[in-house]
Image (cartoon, rainbow, N blue to C red):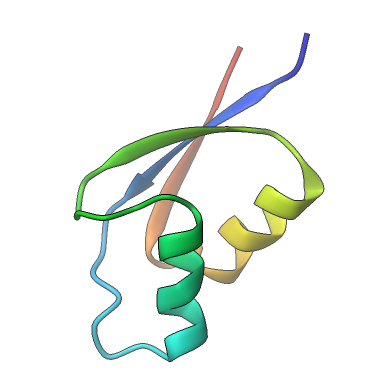
Length: 61
């Protein structure tokens, strides 16, 4: 069974570089405090790592 990541958008991307804003959008966020779930893959981990100061991550079993 694959692990899931629950990612919460906690801090606005205003004032940060455009590539970080694009990463937030690519993760599926449209609003602040929104929660999305993704499969735990290296691609998603890399995206979350890039914007780790803007999001909160939990592992879901």
